[in-house]
Length: 269
Ligand SMILES: [Zn+2]
Image (tube, rainbow, N blue to C red):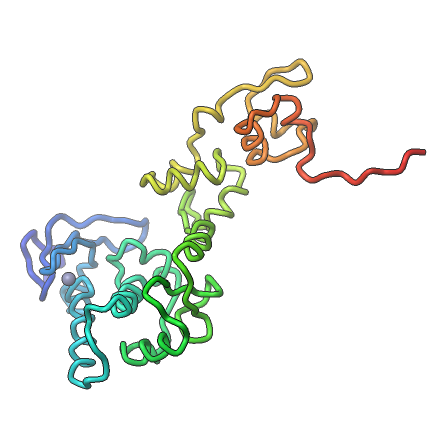
């Protein structure tokens, strides 16, 4: 059997829309596909041919929903809670979902109990669910299960996500808060977050210096770039703090020479 699929080839709900692409070195090529429901994504030829991937994920969701309906164990699939449950499954099991890499792609799983919506709904209602709350995992590296989950406001959830968001650059995947500490990161946390929000490519967002950070600073009668100053032994702070101070309008020399953490006063002799 030829392993080359053609544009227009149909495998259940998925139709091939382009030539195979190698997304990661040494990984099997994936074909761009469109699902009957309208979602676009990538699928391995093997999965298409062997029927392990039949849809973007909508088929499984419909099957679960139909199963629940026949059991008459829950009401409306139009509810916000149902959407929460359905999105959770997408993030963890559908590799075509945008956020998959930060969830299913790094081993975040959903407990067996929550495979059906009814059990999830029961837990949600017993644990303070309200329509203004979102599901949050207490331990970011642990999965979705009753012990690790709680309902929080979107604001609280975003605060957690802001720091836990995963970025891939230089062949490594780390949390945004960790990248800022990395020597290869050229920008402050707020700049990096802003770029990610604007849809920058991860590595560009991390490694491209921003205009204001290319600036030169003068201290101790010398003028050097900000990055050079952070490598100077007279610089008593890190790049992120230095940048922040300059943004706040500190004088160059004060910004460079003031230690990041206050030094304890030693008694005078
Ligand atoms: Zn679909």
